[in-house]
Length: 371
Image 1 (cartoon, rainbow, N blue to C red):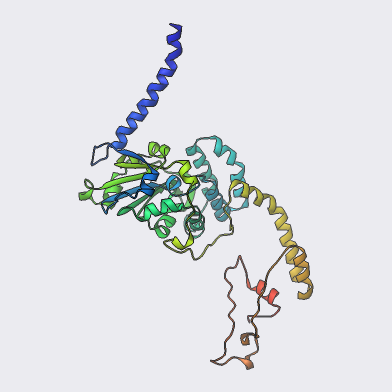
Image 2: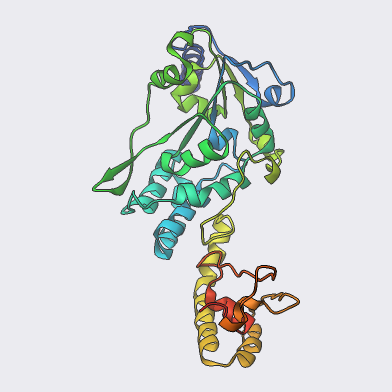
């Protein structure tokens, strides 16, 4: 009797675990239109063997697990906190990072959403279109991108990230047809920092984009990690599922710039590097020193003559290479010496007010270039 009592907990764990797996296979193998069981494969079968994916194929992939090399969401929320919020909001998010690691993925996601989005005006929110595409593109795996490029007639991108962060990137830069993310609650035109509940019925979306009359003939293929296909009910409609392992992602290469479907022309952000936890720590530690150094450089630049301030600025660590044309540009001379149609001039362009402004050009060129 004692021996039997000892094995009871293990027997219950065994029953619960395998009952879930069995139920998962049944639910994943059944779709709304086709009740046949699904087939699970390794991602390498799809990446290297190039199975026939015709125009009747519907691709459903998870963005974090099947497209991006890194599964960490912290850098993208740090970009939102810093660019759309303030340095104080970024500091709060960084201090809460250990807590987001200790709790479950869903709870950690809700914490980051609350910190980053609470009180942000919806109408002026542009981070998802102006800042994040650069960092998403830098993290796309070449192998997964090539699979999506040659696969199927319709592509559905699924993510646990808010819709406002991923929609522009997936639709405009990767040409994904349908994007399914988490919706944020809004009140009075401002984000509340809360997410809507997950959808449980995705069939109307698939029916809308796949065609109501064609659902029976569609070959729906899913690409995700094992945990994702357990948690997200949209993968229950897939006839074939390709599992992406962490070992697969470690071997992926970064997507080269020349293979981007749409070139990234402009990046409207203050951070040029991806703010991982260590990078964020370095930024926050440098911020007081950098602010003091900036004040010192401003005082030097506005109070001293050009010949004196340049060596002093160089002493503080500021380095800038200035290349002047061979001949002086006629456009900076007086009105009596304006060029004729055959003469060539030099056009000075201020590319962004937060990078190089007119005062910087005047200081380093040593002359007035605009009246």
